[in-house]
Length: 177
Image (cartoon, rainbow, N blue to C red):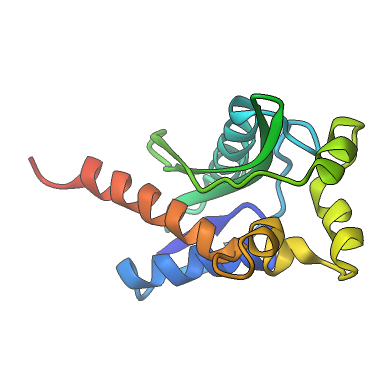
């Protein structure tokens, strides 16, 4: 049995593997970089959610010949504006070979004005955070949520929560009636 992951991002991959291995200990994983088909920096819940759905569905569409696939996972990070403040937003999607798609959203925290201003100007959060923290590849490790939660919640843990919600929906939909 195989789970497809629509990214090579370390934080996202770790989240998928950590949670999936609890429920499917014999599963294998295949990472495939697939485009989100949305903006490089998704703005708003809808665009971020759509990016996750697009990734998950593309995995299934492109690798449908593999009958051993349990499902494909797309995870997408974005930002949303609420009352003039930009917040981190994150979405996940689980797509099955049968055509089912399940979605879930995760935690969000406000971004400092200096970062929000750059994002509104067209910058992408990952590179902005690299400069802000003077570290390279923040999106693969703690992520912005890790920085602004003072390390209490990192990006992988945040996506683990989304994975629990996705697998829970998948299992609920597939339990005997």
